[in-house]
Image (cartoon, rainbow, N blue to C red):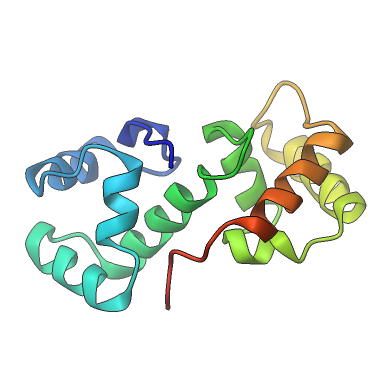
Length: 136
């Protein structure tokens, strides 16, 4: 699994990033490993003072970055289009998802270049193949 710096996560402010670093979390892979289940999120919340719901959201963001061809901006665009988890992405209709992303981008201007239809198809195929990491 590729590990990105925490700065690759959308919605992560400097304070939260510092709290995670104090818990020796410096990459998305480490965050995903430590926050993959409710027990881990609870422990990490106690250790850092970060809300468990925010930890879940950040873990889902780290999980989305495991998808081939995904980056911070596209991950944020997926979230704006209503896709918060990798599992959910695996069930999406490519044409409808592309349309939802175009509409979300029109409102929020998250990316300069929308993903191609073939890229959206590859994301969905990749999401279907990925082993589930997060439990709720």
